Amino acid sequence: MSDELNIRKLIKNTTIIFKLDSSYKQKIIINRKDASEDIRSEECGTNASIIAKHEGIRNDMIALQRHFLKKPGLIADGRDMGTVVFSDSKMKVFLTADIDVRAKRRYKELKEKGINVSLAAVLNDMKIRDKQDKERKHGPLTMAHDSILVDSTNKSIDIVVSEILKYYKKMY
Image (tube, rainbow, N blue to C red; front, side, top):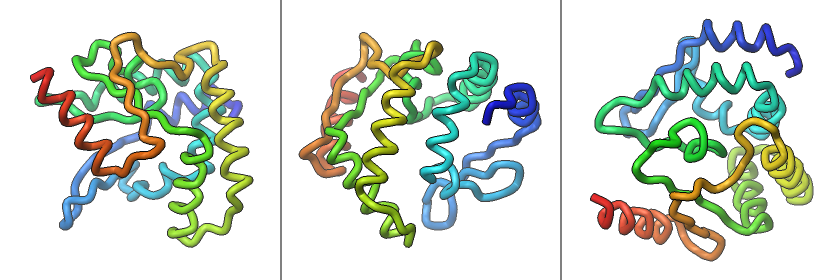
């Protein structure tokens, strides 16, 4: 995770395709391999936070991510989407939740996937990653000044989606 030059070479030689499967679930294909689950793993998230410290890697990833912006637009999630990658986006949502609630949600998700993990470990990993991402020099985790703040702590997915759609309809 510290070999910036080789990671940058990997980025330049990586092909990423987004597609829907037969049930309209999004699939992310990286170099002809379905990585839809892998990119949501704890290991991937931790590694992303580690390599995000490198400015060259961040610049390469930003260019790669911006390449996916096509009409009519896209929905992108990530810790610097609204402040760095798509900073000129017309609508930005800063989705947040209490860290204990986030940890419980992630713990439940991992358990449902059959991954043996403790809630304490998930919470600790989140605290470490949040701290690293907030303190990094380039593109730190912060809310864009023109974002809509949505706190999902005590809300269901349906309520959060409804709230975001309400903002969208007001804008358009």
